Length: 177
Image 1 (cartoon, rainbow, N blue to C red):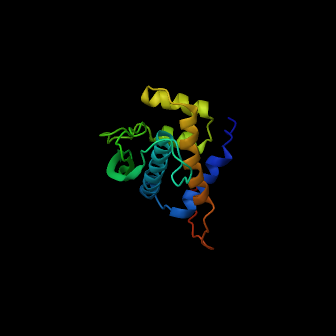
Image 2: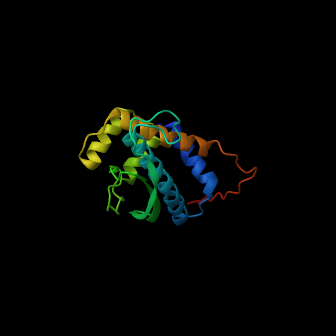
Image 3: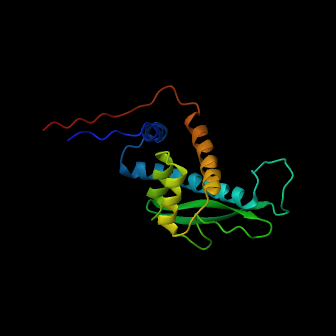
């Protein structure tokens, strides 16, 4: 059977996670993924807020609305790897209704693999829209998808380009039969 070709972006993300967390077993790997889910969800929610308000987070330009960002609310969401604390952005007029993690929603374990696959595979806006429709059962505009993905991708790029330690230890386990 021919070996399936891997997406270079996915391989790079996996290498970076392994280098950063040095997992020694499956539990360590699950803890690493749990650490990544919180910031990923938060960046996507920030993208939703940017789309809702119509301007970037630190924009100096004149705004079309008097509604502004107004801090964060905290909650813990249940993932397949355990509870993850996240900060949900708020607006002054309380009109922001997040679509990714709806108000009063606590269990997001069903969407984790889909969220990861969307960004790790570099999906097109159309593919992401279809996936969001599959997950939530509602349509989402390409502009909103673009805003969300731009905020997450810039965070991911910053994380990938951070300085690394000069030396990493690893264990090679060979099993002979």
